[in-house]
Image (tube, rainbow, N blue to C red; front, side, top):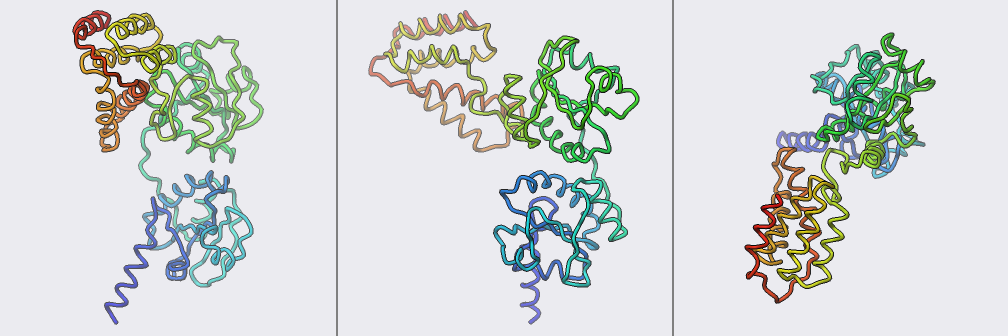
Length: 385
């Protein structure tokens, strides 16, 4: 009996472990966790629900801040779309729905506070008497602006700048804060992009917010192109407040290719004009003369992008080893990416290599060999580099 009880407890423990600090509940562990004598805050959600996605980073931070009190309170969630029996049991009508279980009864009460971190933390503190413990904050990549440094950062830095105009008391601003942190982290390796914020309630920010940009609502989001003038009002952002939506907007206006999370997309590093020239290898014969002509054309575009030299290196390797070099090198690079463990800079470098090699991978293999002029082509490439 003791062994059986131990195994049951162990099974319950395993099934309650969730990614991060929020406990995942299912019909199999719900009563053991929520009815275990500890109060619990439970979110009933659906994976497709937009409001649930917005709440997710806030709810995770709430759970993280209460992790030191895990013996006194549970922060949990139920996928009520998958586990509909639990949704029906507690009469869930919409998503997300927050319920408070006091640990003494199976009948929960509704949570009627705003879904921002401050209000949810205050609610749990009121119910339990335990205040949240903020985890050690990582350095923020969101730059703080004031009247003093606004022009230096936005107008004189020659960078593309995405700015959030906000007020500390604004609920929507609070909800956007963790999203903006993620966006800033994603663009932290882009030397030409800055993500910033300005507190329009602060006395040293009113000249910019009120007098200059006439900000009337919060949050107000604007994008300032590199080399913006003092009279530039910025490009207003009125799209979705998700990490994906804001990342896409910045890419479109800054000419970058970041994905949520910071990785580069499959378009990163590609130069359209060069890609069109390389099509000559796809539709023509791969001869020494053809390679030499391509090198001349590609070299003429060297000023268009810092990635042109890599195209030239690939052409040199094709001259040395034939078109067979491309699929072999592409396989090697993809293997390195798949293995993982690269630092951020190396990850970007190998992603760009993969993208450019993929353009060349469309090259048709021909029987004609190019050994006779391989060395000559190689020398011309090295001279141009």
